Image (cartoon, rainbow, N blue to C red; front, side, top):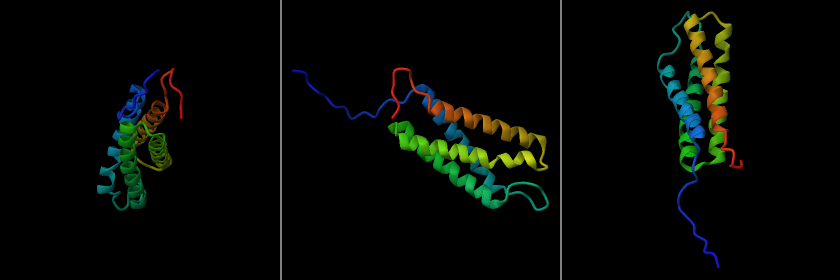
Length: 131
């Protein structure tokens, strides 16, 4: 007769998923300082409501990424990905306004890192099934 044992350990999160979650956390942390330095009057830039929205998404992505890292929760993973994607989409208008080239490059890098983060978050080991 085989004995069945249970463990109290959380399911293991693969290295690729951890890297994706780490990138999501870094992207979330990068959103925090922008609300502290709004666009000066007379200059092109995001309105304060967009900065606050980005802050909320950033903080939410940090919280859910930590939960996903610790528990391997598919719901937390999806919420993290949604926050990262929406945040990346909200930065696209920077390409269509008159801002410095450096800002456009920073936005492009942020979008690429966001895509990489989401791809890594949903990459699974070959032998592992998705939920």
